[in-house]
Length: 215
Length: 302
Image (cartoon, rainbow over all chains, first blue to last red; front, side, top):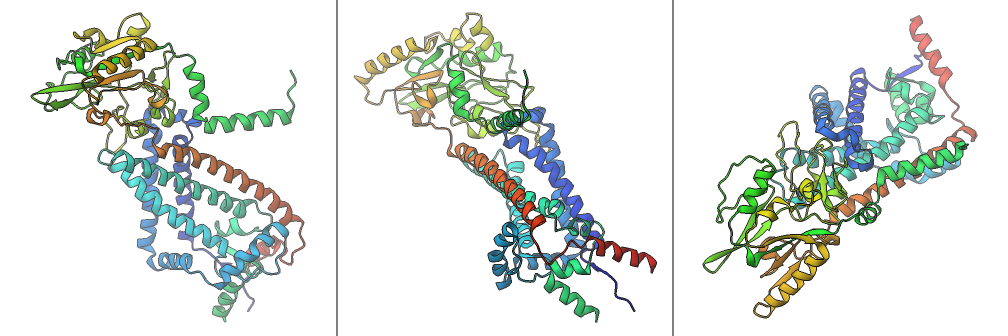
């Protein structure tokens, strides 16, 4: 029997969730940024964009809840994966600058299902998600009740979450779509599979586990 | 005129940066030069609690009358109440400060407004364009005097800010604001700012002989208010912050914007460097695209 050349990386529903969540987030970024940068605030006039922001957030928050209910084990695994940090991760952090800016891959330790950089992104998504949610909830529903000081700090928390999430999103997009060697990253989030060679090169530890399971 | 591509890009990048960040100090310096130098002086010791300013404001600005004003329960500022009294119980009677927008020279509301709905007009007053208002409520939350008001729809968040306009149309036509014109005792005075400052100082000096708490308020606060007060007691008693400032949070926001944009620029520069390194460096992990495609073909054959 010949070995299949492709390894499943993401399930179809995960891919759907990913792009749905992306779309909601992009709407939130655009409708939010025009309130953050006064120079581009023109389109906010009349309050329509603030209404759109609220519609988008229902999907942005609703999608992970639905996903969690339908796939509790996968979701918990995602959270555990994000929060579990070991020696390999710190080795990766040490080796990463030379890899990314010096082309030296010698010290890059083999990675699990996601590498340490992706883990950082997942971590930022989770943390800023919580920050967005709490500060946004208060600004939406308790505007009249909050003291001015508390409201202002809610705005600041929302701003900080936005900056962190947006900067990491830039990195995520660059590595996923533009980086010359991450060739199968985008496709893996499209049809869910990558080649064995790519899996071996980029996620050595994970590849070994998968290969072990296949035996 | 020929504009080279490089110059164009430089200009465009600079303009975008300015557009995004708009250092408030720059905008302020420009605005205050056009200040016409008129203002209002409120003297609490002359107020007789007649509510004529309140009524005149409602009538001139066509704001629906909803509440019967009462010193014990004075109407709060709202979309329909642009001026009211802040009464303070003194002995058997009440001493009131007329409360409305103070038209700051360095106004927190103008600084934080994301859409430019709030701005300084040619007389240095804080004006607003309802068509541009997004209802975000930042002005209401950042004003140290709690002046801008709005009633927001809880679900959609749609709201439009309202506040005192300094009767801009009257003032530009050589008339007094409605409240000042209605005041029977001279507790609300409209005139040249420099003269009113002089007058306020003198009045406080006179009051000060009998009352050490008398204070003149508004001359220097927030770059100079366009509504100043002669008070017979400390500002806090009359609901005025002793040392009003643009709230620290608005400064934090400005810093965050610069940090955010700076970090984004640095990160994008990093991408450029990384792209070159990743493409040129000799690495064992060859681009695996072909193998991936072969894998897909194999699957189809099955």
